[in-house]
Length: 312
Length: 270
Image 1 (cartoon, helix red, strand yellow):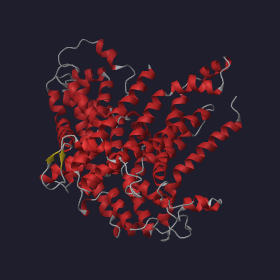
Image 2 (cartoon, chains in turn red, blue):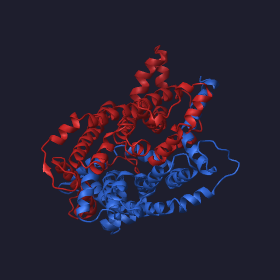
Image 3 (cartoon, chains in turn purple, orange):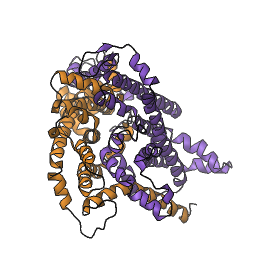
Image 4 (cartoon, one colour):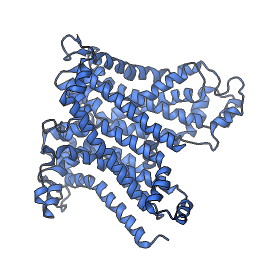
């Protein structure tokens, strides 16, 4: 992870050069506990405690009103066996393809072909391409709902070029709904990936490519031997951001489809909300939330481990 | 070596993706400015700025925006101060348990809101605190503090020791050193943090959705979602509302875009 720098020298070097006297920074200080008190208190009350409570809730059967009954691990079993809940995770996998795999692949390929030329005026494009990351997801959902309307711009465009057969009510269509939601994720992620990889590849010394060319390396070899290893850091950042975004999709589904048609576009987050607040299965909801948390943890750690190792 | 055609091809690709990135944005903007007609690309002969006034008053977006501003100010202010204090301690002081506590906070960055919000709702309901600003603000402060502490610790660790030493020799205590020397010097890092927390708070949907059961406490994105549920999409009023909801974040982004991009890339753990 990079760190904002204001000093040219790494702090570790200086610290070791200075066996501190009393009161120097880095010395043992009790006052530190006072400094961290507000942050730790808020964190403990509103993150740690609720997380533990979620764990407790997940072991009970509770409708949110009556008395809770001990359920053991039955809620977790439900998460992995109930078709509706398992389906939500399958949908999340599909979304990962649209949110992460396609944008990263597309970004890598485009950046690799483009980075051969030094280009001026990238600033403008960077601002525009990054914009989808910033806009509130609910606004994005409203915009794309309009695009997908039966009489919306997408169908009009298809009809205009004679592809009337493809036109459909995208979000109401059983097979098209999930990819339609996913495509919005592609729209959000592609610009980010392209910017990241362009910036990463701009840092590769040109001499490397010239040397490779002298050795008779083709474009593909150039890509796998030079370009790809050089942007591994950027790759792990891009994957972390996009995969986590896919796993945590909620706003988009809530506003665009509410999980429909049928259950075609339910995702884990939506099922957490649905189970807890709409159909009164609080235990199942929290078990699902805990599983989702574990998945997010694992994905983050794995992607960053791979990225770190590769950078060495 | 690089031919002119290759360069123009590159610009063409960038331009294509820029158009794709902008299309939904421009579509909403055009719809918001058009007289009420379903569908896109209505003629722009008469720009209907009245739609914004209607959305603000009839659509109650004025009220939603006010709630969002209050929530954002509270979350940003509290989490910034708490993060600076905690980051200072973690970055420059040694104390027992610092590693364990810090890694706990770091773990907190990764916890999705879904894992907190259900238990939090029912516990706060028992305390009679749902449907209050506390319920909307504090969970977001907590999540932002986890990120902010991580972010500020990195800044304080990298800040120059000579400067701190000099401040000490001048007789400044740890408190004065922090606020008089390190915080002014760390303005870029702090700005990035504030900008990110503002964006996350303004765009947050799940926490207010669960916690605000009363219409008067609806934040802007929440108001928009409910508005969308009531009316068919493609109406100019809905689009005008969407523009209003997006405007504050987009404006901040246009002015401080470097902070957004740098922050999201470096803070990718969130």
